[in-house]
Image (tube, rainbow, N blue to C red; front, side, top):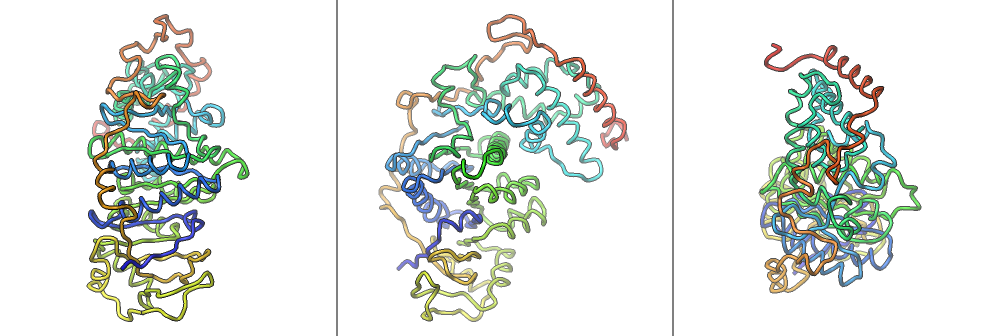
Length: 473
């Protein structure tokens, strides 16, 4: 027998954190049914979009979202970097709000964070961060930069292009490695000069999700390309947040943003995203394996997530940190509701008075069984902030789930506007000083006054910041 838990959609705008070990039913029994319901409500009310970052690469998850969107008449697009798979394009440089509403310094800061180059403000750390931002800012001043492929070419072939000292180029190797990797991903580098009009017109633009209810799915299994998955996921998150912040509240749809295997992109700077997202009606659904995963980015990051997620679900695989949190939050015990109404739970409820680690393990011993706690009461979600036991089951026959798990990937020929990932970016091999037509570019350098400014800023950074490289010791 299952014990359902009625979770009001509005509570998800306060964020949800889902913990569950492999085999706990985290995706199949919780995420897929929850997001299918969100798709149904998005179609009915025409007021929201759903975005999924799948860092595990779950075919059943992908096909479930595709089928649900099709049934409800919502537009469905996907992005993947997996070889020989069809995908829609997603070029961060061609997002509508990127050049229109963001300064070059803001864009450089965003890329530095997405590349994992924001090392914080500790002694010495800010030196390397500022250096990476400086290089990116100088390159982004060039009007011809419209893709990672071109950005990488300029960074490699013109190390002295922006008048930075040689030391700056030597100490930004992480940046160069990131650019080189992203330059090989064809769907990240689609441009009107190198790609067909159909692919460019159907490419993913994050502003679309705030204008028209739809479903976006990013299929980025991090086991194959951890750097690409990490960078693309964080970059999309920052673009989503900046696009939302630049639209008036009445002119944007709500967005439910699900990240499966969230621990893959855990970092201190991403805490800012979680803190600010709900102010722009972006509800985060973050699924990870254990609470301990969140502490890899530091205790402060874990506490930020704890304080900024209104709903928490714990399935099997409860660790020491999780058990301590659950016991601390449940001084009155775990309640299994027998009946309830929109005014709150009835008196018919069972209370477990003692709560130990063994008892928590027993409560969540089977797939689909766990504990849920919601801080904000809306509609039927009236549990007084207490931990509540629940259990879930497949919402579709097991045979249908297996069919989706082994279904073939959508073919490019059946989906106009898609391309197939080949590992070779459009226009590869073109020199940084040539235009797509092969002629020399008329805008090969930034304005002289800009070069002078960058040179002065570089000199100040290299002079005033502590030197921490081996050669300087």
